[in-house]
Image 1 (cartoon, rainbow, N blue to C red):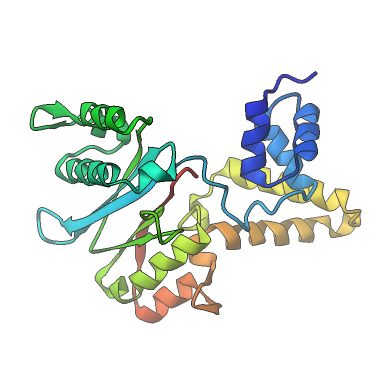
Image 2 (spheres, helix red, strand yellow; image 1 turned 120 degrees about the vertical axis):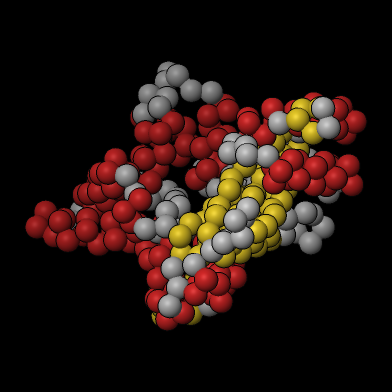
Length: 281
């Protein structure tokens, strides 16, 4: 029997939405290699990998803050994700207050990641200690999972609630030049909904492109496509991958006849960076 656990099955089911037997068969065929199993599930068409978000693995919230840069020439946005075990705790006043303290510490510090933030001291006490003390009070494990910074002439923040009874669980920061400020809010909401991975196709690594070509070829062969048609089919599906995962090539949420790049061009603006967090994803 292949070397995999129930946890591996659960993780792949949550990531793909595929059935338990399909996941187990893929893991068996991949000899327990979860990355290979994920690829097999994609090749066999058992999930729409680019068409939906992975399910949240935990609860919690995202929080963000945008402030002028020290030189006054632009803005810097800070986005943090803090996890709890249950949504009951995520919406509790103590947890929300903790998130505000953690965000404030992130804004006031030069920390670039969660580990550095946790080591930061606030009034002589580390953020890690503050988190641990709150966790003891709440009776749940609390984790400061991620921290991101985005800077530009203009930074837009968008926080989205997946449930009206819970704090925001999707957070987006978008950096543009001054000319792009007018469309930054709409692009931020687009990012929240369509979860792009890259800003431009040039950011996609050669390994990822090669893997997508491989998946496209294997999928086409499994579908019985003629050999002569494979190169065109592969390129078409690779372009489809870019259109799903590259922000500037995605169809714009408010007008799908335009790409995000076209919306920016019409505004005369440039998008210089973005980050998107979904709690647990």
